[in-house]
Image (tube, helix red, strand yellow):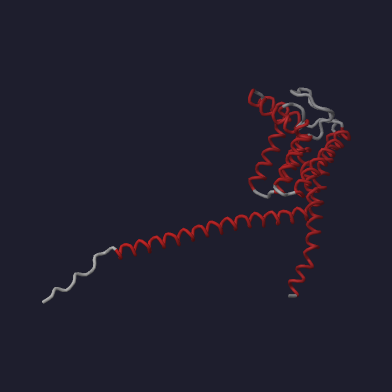
Length: 269
């Protein structure tokens, strides 16, 4: 009994430590993005790996690549990326009865966009010259990639499944590739964008961790309860069917017995 009480008393402390670790990780990732921006500024906006990759990625350009890149450009930015995707994701979560998840999704998306704009104006890095689409001010960091990384981490936290994380990573990498493919970002811009997205999502997770966990547990109980009710109904239907089959068999046996010819009477001597 005393041991159980000790575990209960230690639970809040463990949760606080867990949140602090998440905050530290998120802030650390954001600091790496800032340091990368500082390094680029010291180098007057020129990094060797950026120039090498910019030359290599041009070789991938073609009709199929253009179609994919232009689609990702529309999906990750403008009215679709800034309003439709966050609001649409929040609506889906609300329909799934995950209001805290919806709040986390919206807050993280807005915070990510805010941090991106802050860093763009802080560093003011010039974009590459060979651009296939028009873009706003500031190359560092990539807002499209930051948005993609934020969504990937947030959805992975809300729905912790391996395939969800795999899709999120693939989506973020594809977004990063297409930004350099279109010539609107340097490679290090996309790396910094991913760092910003992950860092913001982690800090937001620390803020929403407790209600998100309670909400997930309630959702899981409702799901398990619905599954249990369905299984019970199926079992009951199966039992009724078995009883009916047994009754039909008994009736058949009785009819067979009643219809059989009786024994021959004794002959008089």
